[in-house]
Length: 317
Image (cartoon, rainbow, N blue to C red):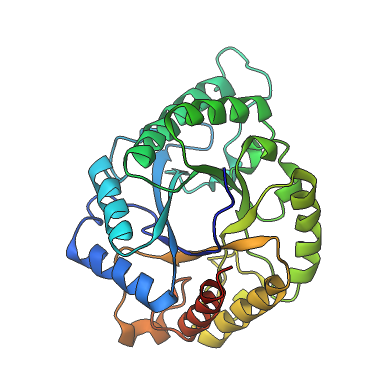
């Protein structure tokens, strides 16, 4: 696969709750995203919900997951706006446990939940949407997101990638979690290395030095499949913590984005970002100052992103 042009991207639609896509609000949201950020890519992100971190069935056809028709609608809308699309099916746990903690015994044990059963269900989920990604012309497919405890299951991931390639001809990536880039041993099976760039504003240079060694070792393109920061006091120092207590602070979000873009700008191996995130239903612009989440709609960081993205795409990077 060829290296994609610079990815000036934004994640749209998460969590992907049934009934919230394929309507006028969602259409308006995506149109605003493209115009306000200068994006040329979007990751269309949605979740299937397993009961707990130790459940082995992923009921992706059931509510609250968006329907196939809603996913197809979102891809069409994005393409009508001139955006390239990465389809991003994600797994979450109904009990609130973060997906990074999905885990089982290394060896199958009778009467215990098993990796083999979980990967069988997970593979069915990913292959279902790999076919939809192919049929709708998505340029990229992300086959997993921040599933730290699964990263060591190299044989299962390689098998899944091989099965995906039988039905999907676009670019394939896996979104490893922050700090995990050098803990994945199967990057060679993918087209692009990607990770979540939730690094403290003052620590980007150290982290990029570490990640660069991984990229050089595998000789693959790289981009940040997620990166972002809440507009909340203190968040620039710990941007991955969406529960951090603080007050709404747009300047804190700007601080993070300026630090990230400045550090990454001199690293030619960084192929872009798929920033986090842009919901299907937006708050009103006059409510932006009071919103302390990741979305940049109507906030100071919106123009920071627009200026950076348009400078990168205008220069043909």
